[in-house]
Image 1: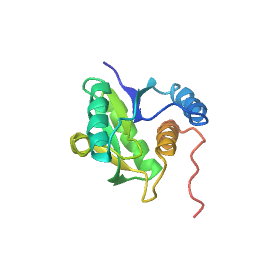
Image 2: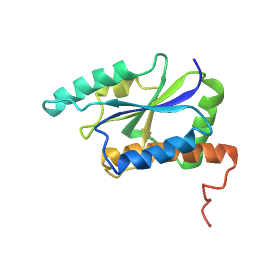
Image 3: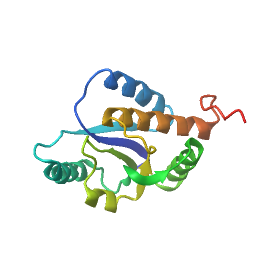
Image 4: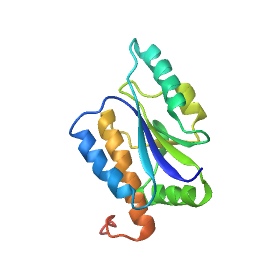
Length: 157
């Protein structure tokens, strides 16, 4: 196994999200293999959906993957701090890194508990499609920071 980025998300493929995420997947490929694994939303009430989607996500994860779950209670990192984490994983973890984006009901609590890393995108509530796009953009931004490519702008102060 080798380092690779795998974004596992719950939802349905729809435009314009597909094109936008596809653009970032292409950009990320300059730095690392990247792929997506889509999990279909489960039927039922919220509790049932969380459980069923959690089970489907676990089944979709690559073996021995380092898991990063989007979680409102997770770590709130700057782009530079996230880049440092991505760089550390790229050099130390020669297996897939799975970035997990839940559905509109979130992620199964057991999946969150077993994750190696919880990442918050901030206090705002985002549509899960936008969260997925943000994950791809931040992964790309991380690689540009690590490689010294002029994409990430420093604050002016």
